[in-house]
Image 1: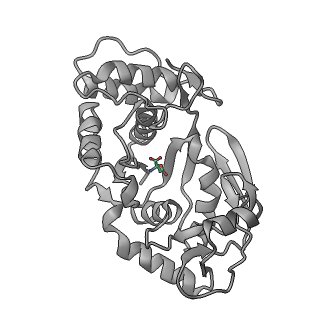
Image 2: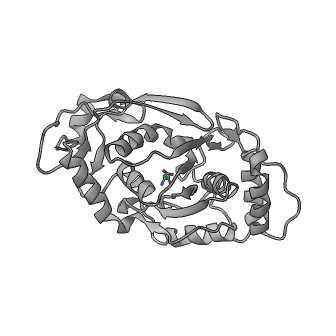
Length: 289
Ligand code: GLU
């Protein structure tokens, strides 16, 4: 069974960039008769904005999306993450790091996504952040849009955090455990997560999970060429008026124009039929505003 997902972090309301990821993952799954699951990535309490998870569900429903099964909330998944960490620890792939932020800044060099931790605490036990010991460094995967992607995870990312010293599990761990638990076969998401994918693949291998197929979408940029995200204060989607945003997202993804429709779910039904014809989106992001 082909199964896709949308996995927003409830740090702010959905905006146009989120809609592009939701729409592309939805169309890619539904156009092939697959399922589409919804996961709220509220694993990191300080990033969660009160009321936003419920607002995300309302916004998706207002835009015509229908998800399969129950919504999965990462905040309720501590046991599953703990047991994955325990399995990795039993395999000798976890150590406790007590380097201070300043210590890491002094020791580490820049990588593809932040600093590369040099492994100073390898072999250490006891309190601290739990890090994953990366020992199979080279990852090569095929992205449906970008083609072959190669990464030396040890050199470009280093040993990364599974659980912070305050107990919060990392995005990398949570996403890998949940994609496996939910039986996700196809991940379609923004290119801002491309540098995370090799780390997720090394974790999948260490946990003997299958690796889904990946598509990383070009990022939607604002008129100044900045990524549309919560940081750039992209306008929240309007639940009362979903069609203009859906049409714009469709255009961004290369869908042919869809004529007058009675509402968002009709537009989506037409988009599902047209998706196989959609042009390949530009790879470096498109200006939409
Ligand atoms: N929660 C992540 C975000 O909102 C997406 C995670 C994913 O698709 O893997 O950016």
